[in-house]
Image 1 (cartoon, rainbow, N blue to C red):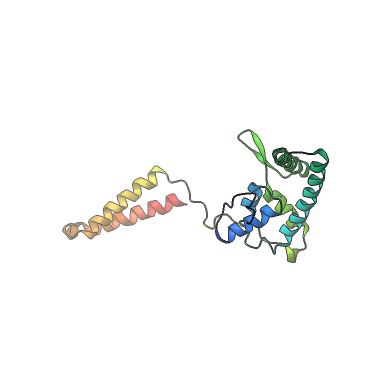
Image 2: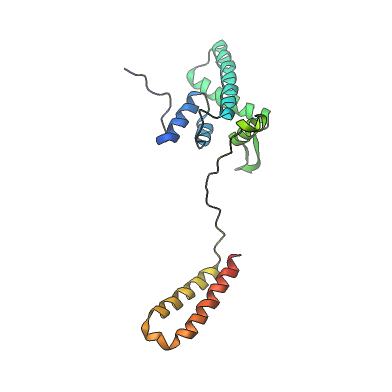
Length: 183
């Protein structure tokens, strides 16, 4: 019989494999979830340095836990506390406040490790979304879009044939207004 994983697999496909790899290297769930976005986790020199740093921290922790005889639950609590203390000591804490707390950032750690590598070994930090953020849609744009749709519907209707020149001018005007609002 095979022993079950000490944690539940949370992701599918290639990203799930990267997540599992990071969890086996003693990264926390949150760290592994975020770093699994990197497509070359096992080959990345930067992640390799991070794995070495984490292995060193884990070895010190295991020695301390064995000396003190902590239970499984206590080890889990102390490991989380040790990771949080390590992030604070290293300065990998976000500047913004989230729900009243400063948060540890694995990406600050990743960027710090990357900056210490030679340029040919540096990876590019992944982008979560390739599409640029869309501007907030204002009521004017919604109103102009509905007017433009009405004009286009009238142009498609043959019964409005006599009004087509005026409708085309109106369509051009509305399209110009929409272009102006998008800028």
